[in-house]
Length: 102
Image (cartoon, rainbow, N blue to C red; front, side, top):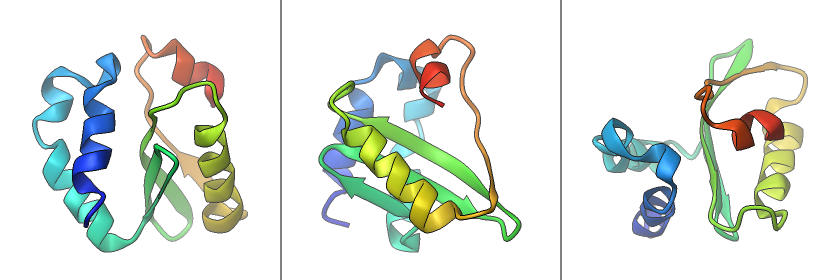
């Protein structure tokens, strides 16, 4: 749980996550860290829920956009967690950077 404040601070730096998203973020992050369904390394954080037949990607953020840290964590997630399951996620229409990434 030692990473909670550090991860929370990353989300605070991203304009796309402001407003209502931040309201329950800290408690959501606590649950994710407790569950162990996350990867956090080099300022990149990804979390998920394993629904059995598919994986629901919950959160993905990188402090250092464009430097490959997020891509590295995402590849680890796909290789080590997802395997041959389907992945579902939501992306805001206005978040073109995320749409291009996925």
